[in-house]
Structure formats: structure tokens, C-alpha cells
Amino acid sequence: MKKRIWPAFAAWILGAEAVGALSGWLTRQGAERYALSIVKPPLSPPGPVFPAVWAALFALMGAGAARVWLAPASPARGRALAVFGVQLAFNFCWSLIFFNAGAYGAALLWLAALWGLILWMILALRRVDRAAALMQLPYLLWVSFAGYLNFGVWALN
Image (tube, rainbow, N blue to C red; front, side, top):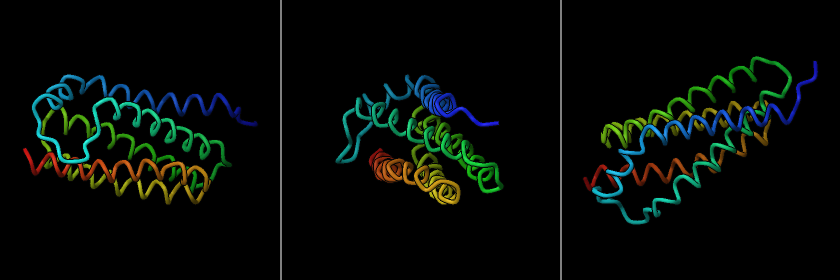
């Protein structure tokens, strides 16, 4: 049976965006406290930049996952989608650790693990669909920058 392309893209993108939206909703009060009371490192973007960037990154994540899901069934496809799910769960939890718990050191360690998972995901996606893997490079770069910001917040606070 042939898979329907646009519904698959819509489902994967909306699913990834829903994870980001739920994380944002659950951490909204912690993020407000953070914005008002935390010393931020140099190069910290203004608050409105974060939701815009994350919305784009979640869309790219979902689109990449959809491309892989639409590929012929294989062990590599299954592994790539499994790693996608694990990194998405780690991404979700980072905001809770950072904003709600205010555990900046633990969040930095979690972010390092997330960075490794993103790299693993890119390599796994590449085995199935090169474009899907390339779509994740902005995510890896942003999480690298987030590592700098997380470290700065931990060091300054």
C-alpha cells in the first residue's frame, strides 16, 4: 500500500510541534521567572526569538521524521525513528529541568546528552534519507548555542 505523503508530513510535523508546545506550556511560569530574575550571558537573544526558532526547528524535525517514515521499511528506518523519539523526549525534559526545576547544572548535563542524541539521530537519518539528516543541522547548531547559554546561566547564577 502506498503511503500518503502530505498527511504523513502533517502528522509528523504537528506531532513534533505538539511536543514543543506542551513543553512550552508546562514551563511558561518557570520561563517568566527566568526572564525576570536570572543573569544571562552575553549574546543571549531576546525572549521572543526562542519560540520562533523552536517552532522552525520542530517543523524541521517533523519533516525529517516524515521523510524517513515514508521510506521503505528497513531496520535502519526503525532505528532512525526510535532515536528520533528518544531525542524528542530528551528535548522535552530539558525545559522542565532548566526552567521549572532551575537546576542549571543538571540541565547542562542533560543538554550534552541531548546534543549526542541529536548527532546520533542525524547519523541514523542519513542512512535512510540524506535530506532528512541535513534538515537537522540547524537543530544541532541551535542546541550547541543553547549549551553556551545554559553554561553561562549556570556559571553566572
